[in-house]
Image (cartoon, rainbow, N blue to C red; front, top):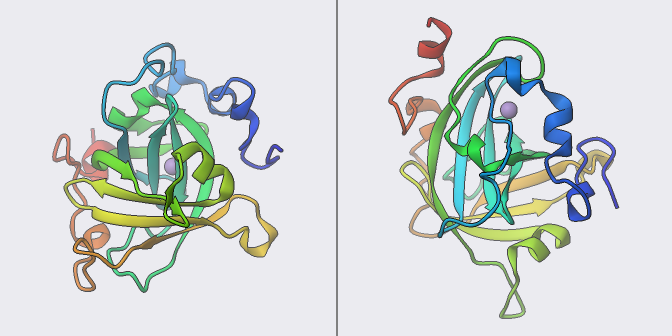
Length: 207
Ligand code: MN
């Protein structure tokens, strides 16, 4: 089954990055082309959250799964408050190199600025009746629980495929109520800088 809107599903059988490449001219945009480094694990599955100031500001949440970055665009960004349900649109898989990408995309798909807002490793905590569920299966089943080890985001988050409004790309991202939960701290509003370079999206705009 392939989602017409985002290409989700194609990757199961064909080139997982086909949709990524179709949407952009990486030679012009300066984004990674995804040629090679995405093959082979480097120990510890990585996650990244990029703050993408495009036609509308959003946060791209990406998990390393099977050699690519499985991705969601979260308009309001992740919340540490377990009572916040954050809409997350599943988007095309991105190459692993993209996890370090910061820069200004001058024109075309995603034009705007991208910074690495948070990154680290994650653990898959997904279970079904007490049995561990591999992350690829969890994605197919539309429910996963992952523990993030980042600078701004820590603790477990649940991702659920809601298909809200009949849109197959619609998922929900919710903080699990654990030690990483915080009902007052709002990092998406108060901490706008890159964890890699200290730059903000505005810094990149004025370059
Ligand atoms: Mn984006």
